[in-house]
Image (cartoon, rainbow, N blue to C red; front, top):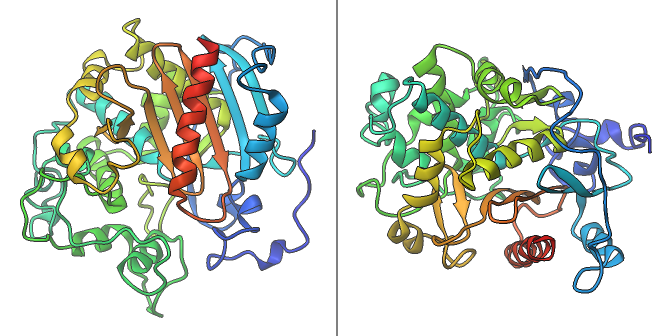
Length: 389
């Protein structure tokens, strides 16, 4: 399969509509044509981690290949990969995306950033107990000043902000303009950058650390913290501590604003097989087998130290009633969890440490969020893992 050329309406795509359907079927894997980016360099070695096997014999009985393909097409899937114990057992691509270009991850980026934070902690470059202002003195008078890095990692910051993906004129629209994802909201000689926007956010007056509140600015702030803690660019940190040690075969990239600040909350664009590779590393570490790239202390902390009370008090509890959130990752339950990374418009990384099944789903869904579909997809992933066990 070869990738089709630009659609006839390519010139119609702009910052104002690149996330809208049908334009997103092209723009989600050509993001760098619309937004500035920074390269995440890989090793450029041939992919050797996965055995070259695609075996669909398991798709019978409870799951049938034709039914699965129809489901994937119906929910605007661009790429779908299932790996079990280092073997690719299923791979599906939409006609408009054969999988050669890096695809945007949206908030799956948050989980990659959370893992990067864990690695930096393991080598003594980051203290999650420290306050944000310890790394970013300019944050002292913002709502983040007294928040700890761990509270940022766990989405427990009490910031006066509403995560409204459909906002066209309020604070979320201003946020996206600051990241370079939307046209500037006002005409100025020097548009507001991401860092300036984050420093302008105020607190709610409530104590941090009590309730899970999903706020994307938290994860962009985390990226700035990692840069200040290491005196290195976010893209270079991902390359040095993740992409190259993992042996990823393709360069990734991350969107940046006009001043070079990385969109660590949602701007990573990666090849689907490299995302599966990262998932496999986490699966090995979470199974107790260990992995040279994934810190053992970090994976244990992620699996066991989530704040259930804060999660259940938050608005996402209905998605995973027995779940929890820790270090920018979702856990399906607290006993023997699958580990999830989730992004808007249908981006997923599903990791089952018990079965060593990893599922990557990259998509171009029309709506940013479809809660009923999300529940069905989690059930689908669990069903695939169960069949493959």
